[in-house]
Length: 315
View 1 (cartoon, rainbow, N blue to C red):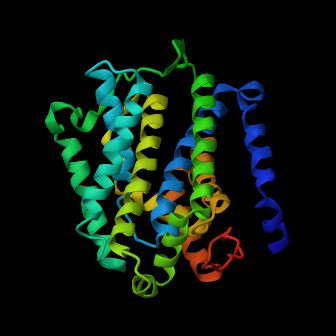
View 2 (tube, rainbow, N blue to C red; view 1 turned 90 degrees about the vertical axis):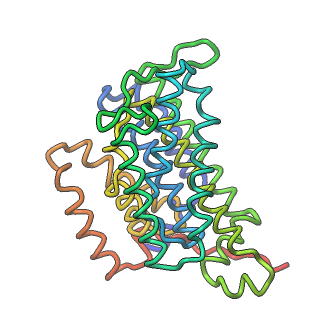
View 3 (cartoon, rainbow, N blue to C red; view 1 turned 60 degrees about the vertical axis):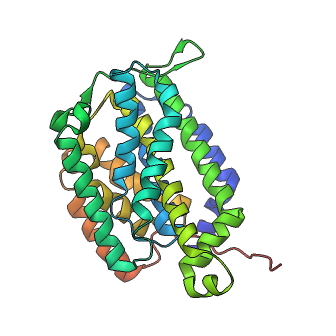
């Protein structure tokens, strides 16, 4: 099993699989194209959750808030103010990152269950604000409809195939960013804070600053996924960002494997692609995934596809 995981974890295997995915619109019908595009979007959200939980070791059970911030900023700028979809990306990502930093700043010193409860509260407040039509812009419980499709250099990219390729390329870019994060000073600092915060502090690391930064980075990536989600669905509503969505993202990282890109992608596929492909199974997905989570935590606490240990040079 370990040999198989080591083989599949090789970078060229992932590149081959991603390149094969580019051909999905050429060989499968539009239903599968939509499912593949949705997988790419939710994979980005799950990877953003993994930045906070799997890499920095903080319990965030309100991550759907940042996903929703990105989606709603894009939806409002496009439908109310007429901004092109791609032009909304920077502001949506910035708004989500600021939300992550501002919400995290007062609570990052909390640990374990206390941090978990605080983030749950943020998610509840966010949904309440959306339901009450915040600023007369969010559309209440019905949400925002009529979101336009993206365009690239004046070329319409609103077709399902074009949006799939856009989402698939964005998915690759985020995976590359996460891999580079793991090799960077910032990624190593997150790793040390997660595994021994006291030791990191005694070595002069400002743990509060880096924990807030982890929240902001994870929120920015989730906000980016939200912009893709808004364009793909052409509508956003509070139901997509409720507490159960945050629980699902949290569970995906735990079940798939903390800090493991393949593990997070596997968890995303099991939680979002399988129910979409088999609609009769969808209403049972939380039940089945909950049982799977309990079994994995007992039998394989490191997750289905744990992060492979790597040798790090000491300088």
